[in-house]
Length: 182
Image 1 (cartoon, rainbow, N blue to C red):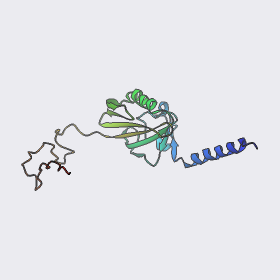
Image 2: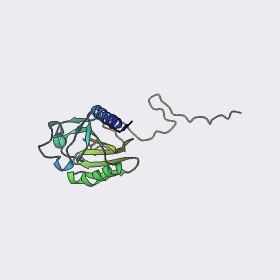
Image 3: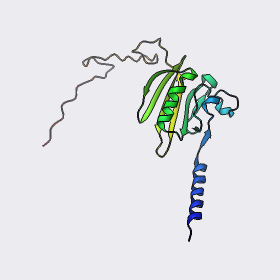
Image 4: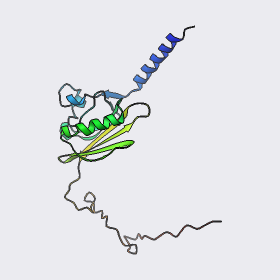
């Protein structure tokens, strides 16, 4: 008995099943990010490079506003390796006007950029099976007008307090050394 046609049919059924479970939308390649031939919902993101073959994860993405003033997160799945995708963003973000600020290349790579009054963080993770997941978060950057000890104008002061000084009824005491049990 020849099992080859049966195996082919099972593989085809599995592939179709996986494709049906996918909840994504194809994104345009970086070269056409500013062109008018994109689907309407992707024309909102024109100021970051989009790798060719990327698929947007609709459940984890949120885009507010439009074009060069959007805020939110775009999450994409790619078949490229995490190293290839990290290199892609390191090379192309400056072409879109983003200045690199910080990068950590590791199991999960994080790249941070600024452009005018906005900041972008690109996070690249390896997928379990194949490829990578990219999350690009863009938001207005915090103003440089405040002091280093204030947080968002909310009055937070990071100056350490002396241990003996009470702070609104809360005090800090040193813990006793651990007891040794026999």
